[in-house]
Image (cartoon, rainbow, N blue to C red; front, side, top):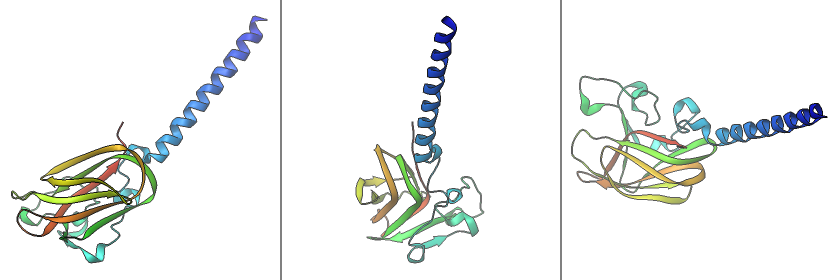
Length: 170
């Protein structure tokens, strides 16, 4: 009798573990395995690449690049993308992901402060000023596209971005 009860208990326990593992696997998948869902490695693109300007050499100029550290002789021209005032940089992902964090690194060689808006699909999640690296945290949402609108900066009408990342952070 105890053997039967033990057998039933182990089967129920094993089912619940399998069910929980499947739940965690599907959450990890919809969250992009907790990695940057906009990176080139994950198929990230810049939808309006023909309307913006790129500075730098080769792979170093894309704001979706995987190289975080690089060196050049002239730091004024390290890789970044630039758009004019009231223009967007549009970053579609390969599928809809659940994210809650966006990290943006602006071109920060001088003292300029960027003015901009960030949209997840069509919902504005941030509007303000920033310099250097900005981390935007928001409630969990399913996102297909991230758009960043330039409102200029403290020196000229451009917005220059070195790196953009979007991911789910626990």
